[in-house]
Amino acid sequence: MSVQMVLLPVFVLVALTFALFFGMAGNRMRAMKTGQARPNDIVAGTVKWPARAAQFGDCFRNQFEIPVLFYALIAIGLPLRRIDLVLVLLSWVFVVARLAHAGIFVTSNDLRPRAMAWFASALVLMAMWIYFALKMLLATVA
Figure 1 (cartoon, rainbow, N blue to C red):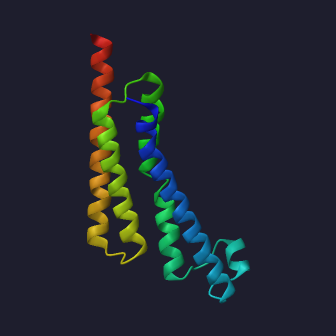
Figure 2 (cartoon, rainbow, N blue to C red; figure 1 turned 45 degrees about the vertical axis):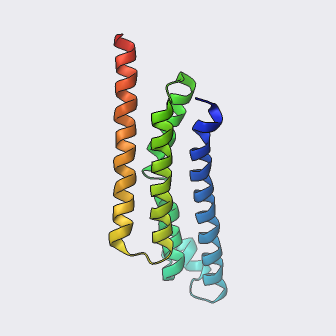
């Protein structure tokens, strides 16, 4: 498996994180300019961001929760040369589910489909870890 094929879904997920960062920053700056958020509240940590800025902020923060386990799997598996086609395909499924989750989060924010996309990504990631762990353990035994 080429390094590029393994890293492409990682780069897409990183791009999503940066897109959400810029969306969050833009919405927060707009809130500051319109007076919906005040510098003193931000410094004190008591700011109540407007709904749109809060959506982007929450979605951005979410990219540092379960995706961290995805990054860890790739970071461990790549130098060990244990990432195969199955893991690359599952990586893409994970990334597509994360894209769907983020898209729902920052648009309609409808909880039901958003939760389904989140849960799908979590299940795929769990399957990836189980597959990877079994592959590592069985390779060690053999």
